[in-house]
Image (cartoon, rainbow, N blue to C red; front, side, top):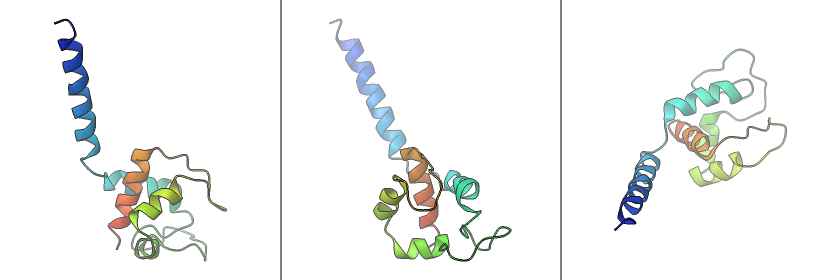
Length: 103
């Protein structure tokens, strides 16, 4: 009988965690991350912000060339001349969600 309460609390926490995760990416947070980390080199929206260097693909081009899963894998590892972003899984999901809005 004493185990019912902790088990109920555990189940409640698990369901809350699943519900929060299944809510989907927060594209506005993804847009903020893009502005913070990516906009100095990539065109992250409709037009360049300041001095964007020639070369890196725009987010619109990236959105059309990669699947969401490919983007998640790419963003979870250090890559080339880009800064080490060290994004959390939630931040990666938000950023990928934002990029997908540009298709």
